Image (cartoon, rainbow, N blue to C red; front, side, top):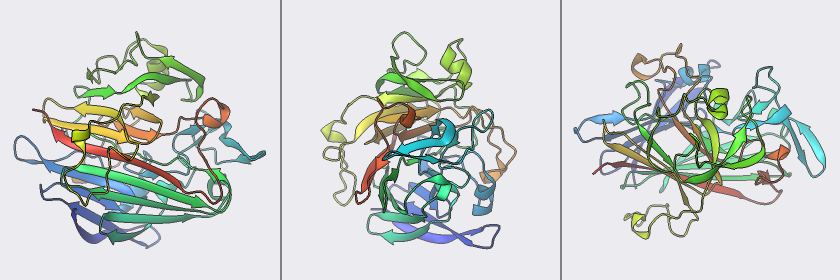
Length: 371
């Protein structure tokens, strides 16, 4: 497994120290993660030009992440994505969650005003990577139950970045965790991603309204700009006169991942790696590539859905790494998840964690090179 280096990542506004961990494998690939929000800060590798390229948008220190309002690289929860009216009913009792999104701030997103990506986590080095832990108090964001969350970042020598999630609660609660990294396969400072290609292994998507809230319909992608079953230039249809793209200002939707297992030969050669493509229930969710850099990115997950978001609301204003300001559509996200607004749509899988159970999920991003 990767070697690990720990260093300071500055201080938050209240004086608390933030830590940065660098995982480095035998290929020289590096992944950087921080205790502030358990965020993915950087992922750099040597490309076809033998130069190091960092494919993750991010900031230079913890203080900058504290000012971020785009969930950049964050571990979001307790519930990733949106909930209409911020209302959830569990065991017959309705809970009112923070209302922090929508045209009139009438809905809930990403755990509320102080979601997991805005918390300072503790971290420890293990023989498999860096393990982050956060204890969420009963009532935080409006959610019931004291919940403990563990997130393990691992980097294999095959350039596989694994994110494993575990959560337990002392009361029935909501659990739908994801990572909100923005990727740009030409490098974080290279501008729009519209010429990069995306493929999503899904035949259906969940229709969403102008507030990005699904209404329960699960529609076929065939014959629509939502059909990304073959590698498609991201900018090919992003501005089509199609209701979903007009309301979402581009792609910002949930696709229903079909049960497509990776081939056996994709199982890592590193026997110590905690990634098990064959036995772990992982499905192939998405694939992206860049002709310019030659990099490819494949996403596998145990979750039923993936939110493909094209950074439509990025608008700069906050300097990132190397002083870069991230403008509209300069990164894309592949957020593995339960479907948004599931509580209003009982036909969707429900993101409920029962008292005494352990919620588990895994997402793996594999960085490769085109032939």
